[in-house]
Length: 316
Image 1 (cartoon, rainbow, N blue to C red):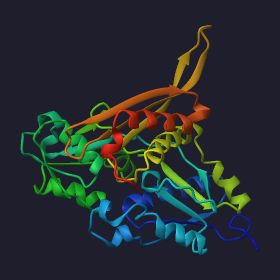
Image 2: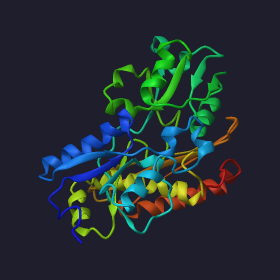
Image 3: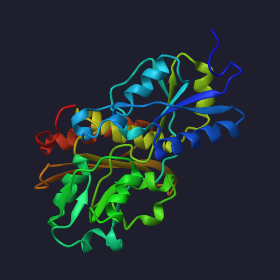
């Protein structure tokens, strides 16, 4: 049976149909084409696209299950996901063939008048349906009124523009990808708001038995991003938390100097869990070898649990 990579047809890339999703997928297609591999997009509708309920209600994997099913059914050859939307449980028949270089993982505030978070008056309405964002916003003690928020990026930003909300918090990476980064009022430092594990990163999947396609997609991989995301998602998995849990994590490869003055790379990881009402935020950090990224995440999760994080983490 011919594989996707050995056939004459373009590599078919499965993606959601939103502007952000298709922009992300087209960037992957463009890189494949530049590397000499014809590619085209296949639009797939997911449960998350047809429901207006909060993601926390409709479940983990709501944006990814349909795309993975299409991949398994042969409707597409490659699946592109926002990595933060993927459940942490492994799928042995699927290969995480590439994790391209991530875009800025921070959350971003978009507000009326360009006000930063500390300038918003008490009682300001701020939109987000992310339990993680809502809990960390409440923890700031600013007296903000959190409103549920669903829809694509354009519609979310539109609710600020039309005066329905005073501000929204979204992933800065999404705004960068659709060319609207200039609308960001403030990129929220992780000290203020820890981003979702894998935020800003893409996951490029294919069937694990298609060795040639795995090889082709691996050309797009960024090892530093993969290591960071592995550490962040290991925290989430070890806490047995879903992608909508109030868990934040961010890792980056940094340069360190040993006792002999030699420079080497290490992985720096910060993670935290917040109480839903913002009354408590438990944080911890660690530094370790890049090649032990997943173990670093597991160890940090164990530290968070020792500090009492289990009280605030609903099981996946």
